Image 1 (cartoon, rainbow, N blue to C red):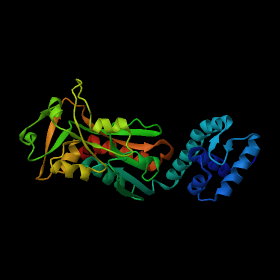
Image 2 (image 1 turned 90 degrees about the horizontal axis):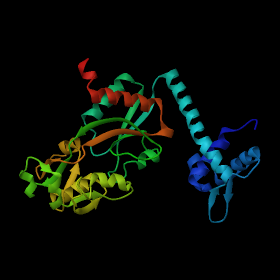
Image 3 (image 1 turned 45 degrees about the horizontal axis):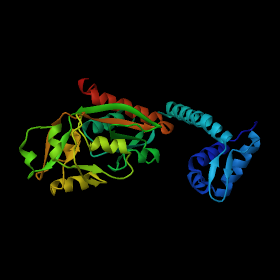
Image 4 (image 1 turned 90 degrees about the vertical axis):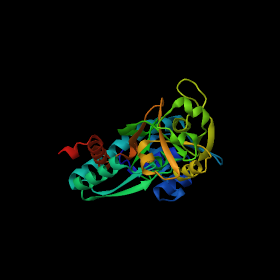
Length: 302
C-alpha cells in the first residue's frame, strides 16, 4: 500500500458516513465521479470491495465496516495532531464559533473576554442554538463548541466544563395562581401543564426539560410543545402552560408579564460546554480552560 493518498481516505470516510456518492462529493467539494474514482483507487490498494452500490442503496461491505471502525479515530487523531502543531507554531488563532442555548450568561461572556485576552489572534463568534436542536449544530460542524443544557448522552460528543448548577425555575404568567408563591415543590407541577420541546432534540433530553413524572412517580401533565424559547415564553404569557428553565435563562428573560418561581424536588439544572470529538481543536481546548477559570471565579481573585 505504498503512496497511499489521504484524499482516498477522506473520500472513503465521507462515503461511509453519508452512504451517498452525491452527498459525499458535496461534503468534499468534488464531483460524484471523483468520489467513485478515489474509492476505486483505495479498493485497488486494499485488494477487495469496500462499498456495495446498487441503484437503490449504498452500504459498506464487512471489510469496509472494519476499515471504517479502525480508520475514523486514527484519521481524527492525525488531524487533531496537525491542528495542535499548527496552533503551537502560530499561537491559538483563527475563528472560534461558540454556540449557546437560551442566553449567554455571565460565566460564558466572562470566559469569552478571558479567552480573547489570552489569545488576541483568535476571533470569536457567538451563535444562538435552537432550543429544539441542541446537538445538531455540533454534529453538522456549524459551531466549534456549545454551551447546552444537560443531560448530554450523544455518542461522539465530549462534555467539558459543567457549571451553573442551580435549582430549576418555573416560568408562569403573572395571572397564574403560582405567581405569588416564593417557591414550589415538584408535587405542585401535577396541577400545571409543562410546555415541552419538539423537533430533532433527542427524547431523553426533551424529557429532562419537561418531565412527565416527578421523582416519586407523580404524573405531570404535558402542555404545548415549541421549537424556540421565545415561543415557549409567549405561551407562558398567554397562560397556555408553564415552562421549566435554568436560573441564568430565567434571570435574563425576566419580564413584567412572567414570573419565575424556584422549584424544589427536581434535579438541579446544569450547563455544559460540549464539542464534537472529531472537531476538537486547540482553540476549543483553550476556550474550555477559559470557561473553567471564569466558572470557578479564579480570574476574579487574582
